[in-house]
Amino acid sequence: MSEVDPIKQAVQHLRRLPGVGDKTATRLVYWMLRAPEGTIPELSASLLRLAEEVRQCSVCGDLTGTDPCAMCADPRRDDALVCVVEHPQDVLAFERSGEFRGRYHILHGAISPLDGIGPSDLNLRSLLERLRGGQIKEVIIATDPDVEGDATALYIGRLLAGVDVQVTRLAHGISVGTEIEYADAVSLARALQNRRPL
Image (tube, rainbow, N blue to C red; front, side, top):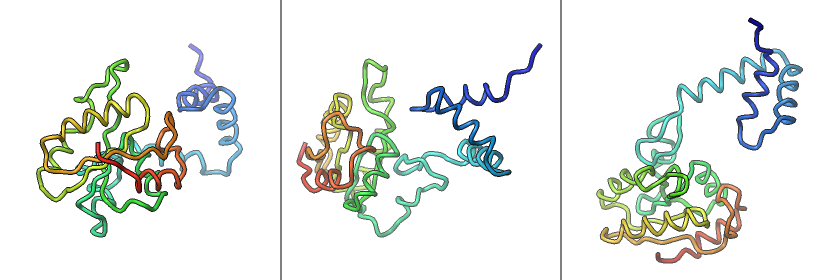
């Protein structure tokens, strides 16, 4: 039985990453082989730490190495304002805008019947539990401005209709079809400033 070529195996694994094809994976493998001694073990150790130490924050659902995450533990943030986003990387996009100082809630996806994702697959139950405390006065729904994001926003709006909280949706300031994590800081800031009731 012949052994698997470690270069080919590494290329195959790297190709599984989003946006990485054959050429990029091959280039990365050869870069690592030429990198200073210790680079590959350090990279391997950091990837293992991701698998072993990163978990969801018990409050907002963000991915973190500490529970609660740094933003949920920050006493300077506004407890009355919660921004609901689809993915953890959306939080980073809002933080780059410098406009939002409230709390976050991460859904980990959007309603997409074609992909078999329904409301029960999203992190919605803990959002309802957070609202029971009575501190939250406004929920900003900041899902992507696409069909799935709009469906998710509409569902959340209806879900919160009986709750004593103002529900708003981001204003158009982000191009339709753009994912929030790729939007520029100015567009995100304007979308936050011009949010409207849902």
